[in-house]
Length: 317
Length: 322
Image (cartoon, rainbow over all chains, first blue to last red; front, side, top):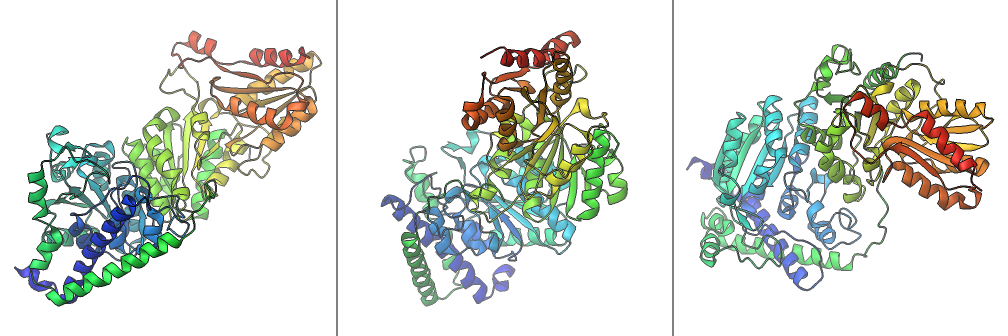
């Protein structure tokens, strides 16, 4: 286990903190939704935190990140301010987008979290655009895009793999394959169940890993990001994972067996990482307390922020 | 300038690329000049890094250009025919148009899409449409429809300099036309009077401007002086300039090649009656294609297209009423 040795305790603490922050933040989102403090269509990534944490740890502040509809964790991991993020999800004036974006259209360009999207697969081509600009600039930046297994069957995905490969763009495709496109298991939508199979067709290096094992994600993504930085073209990392919540908050979850959910709960990425012992237990509880207080302050900030009404402004630059 | 419409487009692209290193041209066959020569010579002067041939993947290419624009480039994408913009409508409508707004003003998308529209040469239903009204209906997009060589050059420069996504719609039948008035300083959102007159206002877009001028010549033989106005930009629309003319003539005809129902003429008529109702002596007339796809056969195509006689007829209807 060379890789364990290569992760120092500060790095391990930082990765754990990112996962715990996402978990605490999304539990707060869920709680505020239940109390009708947040409205809208909310897609939580509880259970998938290892992917966001591992990938973000490899990025510079000015590396571009794009995401899909399940984006809270990605934005947090990229360094977005939890208070402004929560205010945005709550539709408040002090949110990153002044309440105009909301949960599915988050944007925090100050940390190069460019945009999320409500259209499945929609931001994959946008990441290619950032990558093209980076390639021309020649400063070794990379663009990363997160998408789910549902996006694998979109034309945008195949077209983007083709162009990224052809033009050797510095982009890393991260497929969070959580086995379900909304309420439907992947097997009902395609015979090609692995994003890495698509990547292989377009001659893009790829790896399918256990997405609930942070170290495995890190192992696969490290060379992928390095290749992009070195001008060697795109890579794809497929992370097999599972959302422990429904597709959206309020989803009755009738399409999944309780046994399946219990099985995945036992594979919780945070518990698995903690069990490695890279972060001492007293430090783990310290981080937990710290992120909870960050999230409480974020909730207070969101609640006290004004409700905007300027619905027709900022349409044009 | 005294060149053709296409040369105007080519000149604008070359000048923009010389002026600003962040201007990139992308599209099918653009590095070899494109099907009409609009991008001729650009790859030779600026290199294939900045004049990029793309696969036939309209949606992804437009999405890629949006990402490049977010990252500081100023891309100009050629969609060979507006009929194929349907393949990129998701990216155009859901991302290009909305990212400024959805991000609360944090992002901007300085993207220009050049695309050819219109009936010419019996190319049928998939290479001849006029879809500009769809685009003008989307908050966040700007839509430009030049009618002269000078405007093709001037307005394309303005579109590329603009910090918003602009769809620049070029009528194919105008590509080899030269002449027209000397350029003013075109800016997006400004109409131009093509012929002054006092009796009826004819508002025409794209290729219909020439037909409207022809119709005005016919009307003049009967002592009717038509004022022909070219909006040039459909979004934003220069309503004050159009209304000023209508307040003078008290009559209006709106002409476009697109099908009449739901066309930009409906919007223009609604805006004019809202600001100049008391000045109108007759209902606003609309002239355009019938509510049918564009046919392929030459005789059908001729029957489908609005002509000068239709414009003359509509103008006379406004004059014989009230």
